[in-house]
Length: 134
Image (cartoon, rainbow, N blue to C red; front, side, top):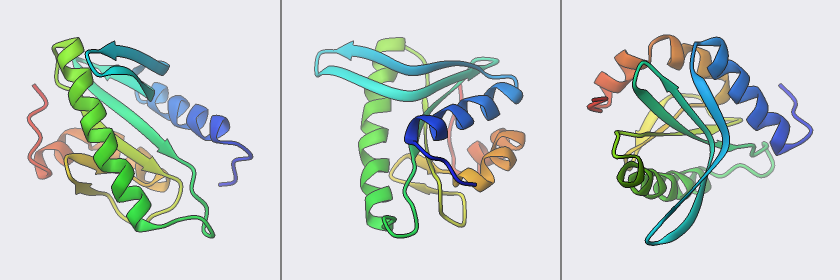
């Protein structure tokens, strides 16, 4: 899949979420005592809230360490968002390239190529990674 811009990549992720019945908010901005923060796509279905951080790294630009660093920052951002919303928020990082779905420091890393499978089986993945979705 070739995306000419990061905006196009984020929009593709949003469309996939909506096909799976999630209502979405694009570039969701919130404020708390630490300041302003933004989530690329906030998706909700039946009380389950996924906060998506899209990473359009390419082969020449991709580094596992960069994804891990972004996963840590996203987990913290989602922790802040939980306090604002007073609801559980699942941090999900969606890189354009990677080969498996895994958990890193409270963020679920879901490669774009595996996003459909993740959404079809989201509750099984949440159980596997020991997330309490309630």
